[in-house]
Image (cartoon, rainbow, N blue to C red):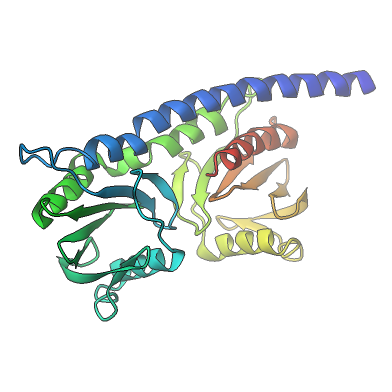
Length: 299
């Protein structure tokens, strides 16, 4: 029996090492191709006036305030500043009385596009912020760059290059290639990567439609381990009995011959759902391996 366990441990370690290597390779490719490239080549580019002028700083930031990519001199903003910007997108006019603040600097809010674009002015410079499906694209400028040129650079990137499909490209790759992967001929039934606010970053076709209270319950259990134990864990209305996990880090559930594993990362929730013949151990391996790597990457 001891020999069998050791052989299984070696097998799992071998699979984990191979998959981790693939994840690292994919992650490197994605980072090289996407967010930082958008900033460097499409936001900090020549504004097109033939005189070599550029934005002062630029960034792509998630709705939760996480920095996806930024130029070297993009200011260090405060969490409350991002919260207020998002509130203005949700409730246009919210920033008008107080102004828009970024790293403590105040911009007077000028005419934008309610719910879509916020524009601000400060002395000889200003700012344009364009909201996308999951992020905000920031452009800061100073003279001789004009407000119109800043608007053009930021909004052009979103409209022509930063489509919803490209925004989800990297996360969908994680789901397709590293969660719905083959494990000794078996696969998860469904998988997803969600933001901690419940927003869907990427999911497999069969992943259930979650309810707000289900996400809230999961989040609360990570914050207060044991919260779900009396009621069970619900996903898309299906109830799972909570079994031993890792308090504050991993939630595991069982339902008949199947179950679920949820791994919390720095910014997300990695979820894997399985049915026999896949085992709970295989599901744990797939989900937690990716989750551990995302934590290493501060994602």
